[in-house]
Image (cartoon, rainbow, N blue to C red; front, side):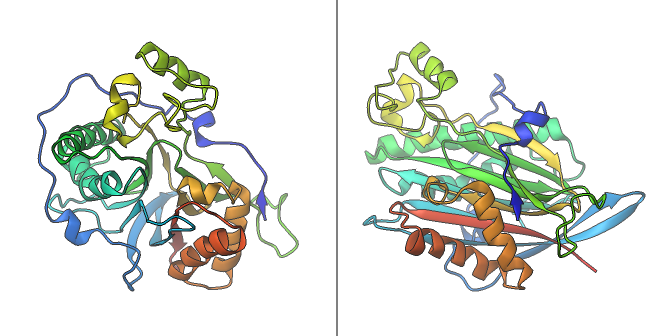
Length: 342
């Protein structure tokens, strides 16, 4: 069972990054990204292999990942997801690259779909390391990719006359390093086992799994975000919404709110993948509205231990949220499992 914990990697690492003031020239996103991005209705289960150094040797891991979604009680589905275990696109290199994301749209699906098609390509073209791992360069590329994507999205939305927006939670795996970036209220949760010193073993001989929150929500009601919004000339009403309308304070799009405090600058942090890391769950706010973090980790861990495929696990997680726990909102999840090769 997952240990009940509010701990986050953000508490343990000085990893939050702010946008660099130097802005590189905008580069068009790659057309091929739309061909390789995988939506949740395909039938293959994507896999990738990575190596993790350990005590002078290497551990070999497979990444198995899949996405599922359900529109819940809503009339339309406004979320979009990415499962891209081989995420090199036109930027091949020695460094293994995988990418996963959920875009939680509001006011429509156009912003979520635009970000799904363009963000990763923009991050690659902004200089995501492909040969040797450089954490600082990777975070800079992610920040710049978010900036470019939002800038071009706002141009497209102005031309098209649409005003919807999207929260985002994204993961990049570069070699044995995991990078997490988010804007808005979509979350990433890591399932990590306790150190194997024998003191915390459960009755079946296994070690307990802890749910670690990898992201910080950006909502207008939170003091830090509220202060930033007010400084930009916006207001937060008594219902906790920006201009009495928008709950999130960071998002792609939302062009009518960009002048009053909505930004698309993500929190970006990283950690080293170890043999104690079992899986990551990405979820929109609809999922986390009915699942606690430890509860979701327990649910996924139980199914994986039974030998159920990641594809089936992701679908059961969403089905549980919508059918059993009565999630009324759009519900999307990506399950990213790290399997040690024998």
